[in-house]
Image (cartoon, rainbow, N blue to C red; front, side):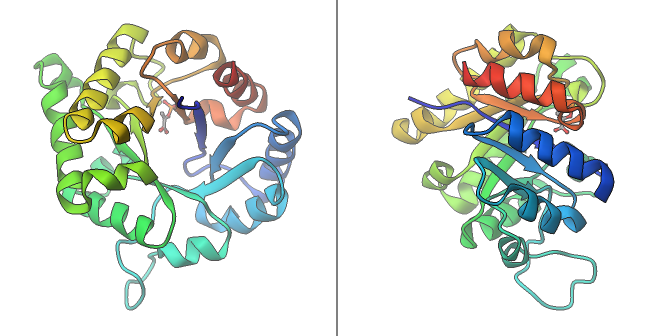
Length: 248
Ligand code: PEP
């Protein structure tokens, strides 16, 4: 039986002062419950010291595909491990669209994360014009296929997949539970065709304007196993309510 997993993606938000209150609040309100917060790199040490010993894991929002060397501005998987990260978001649509990350680069980052023992949260999802042209499944399949070709289907036993329709991220537009469920079922079915055990155990999160008010109906879908939460993860009451809805 899969357990729901909710992860917060703070994006490029926060400050030492703001984070202190948010991290302490999450730790207290979700004591004993599993959840993840993915913070900006400079705040990993703060997350580590605030959350160590609690049930809340922390992670990063990106990593380098390289292990070390002359890659100015990059951060490697082993550096994330130094700060106690368990998770790292890979292939977020903002990385793909704003920073030109190709499917192949995303696959290399996914493998770099796993090689270090981090759990990648692999984001996939279609643009609005791709949905409107009826090619959502083709896009999501391509994004997954590149990772599976590079890392193998068995690698998904140590990963999380996040379906994030790009048109729903930060826009206030949420995929309907039926729209999201259809793509989640497609993803699981595609992986099941290669390895049914991996598919059954795979946590597939939904992301895209999830809020406390719409979390329960999304999470009630059989193939939605949690959420990747952007804006609402910065609001303590919202994030806590979403995590509690996922724990029901
Ligand atoms: C995200 O950042 O991955 C995301 C889904 O953002 P939001 O919840 O704000 O749409």
